[in-house]
Length: 168
Image 1 (cartoon, helix red, strand yellow):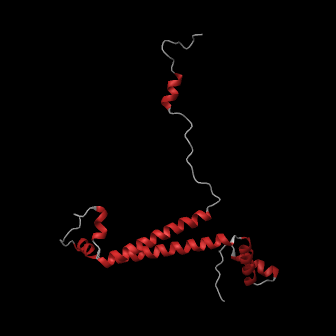
Image 2: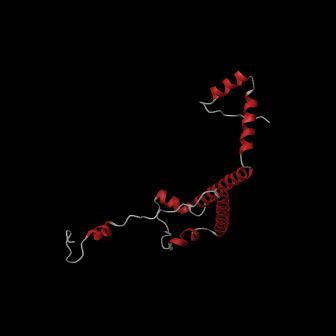
């Protein structure tokens, strides 16, 4: 198997000098470094990160498909009317929550609902994977504001009724 390796600009001269001084091939250095890295890694964590990357990629692809389908399908006439400033039937009389789906034909709506359902499944899977990856991290909590408000502090310094500051 032949793969290319891109070495960082700052690191390349150091690695090449190391190879020359130790009389080892660049390939051996790369393979040993990868073996050491993987040996020190948690395989389960790598598996979860790979799964997360797959889910993010699939969700982005589904989003691109739905945007393309809507932009080139039922939304196209409205878009053309806006661009060409042609008078036409407006969809503004639909309530906002119904506006996008009412513009779709039945096939587009069916596909859009399936895409939305899969995106929701992906979001749930991403949450599960992230929860496992972040199992050692404590949840973020806002710290309580321990200092009182300025009005309370001023009230504490006020003297009650007819008291005087030098009275004792």
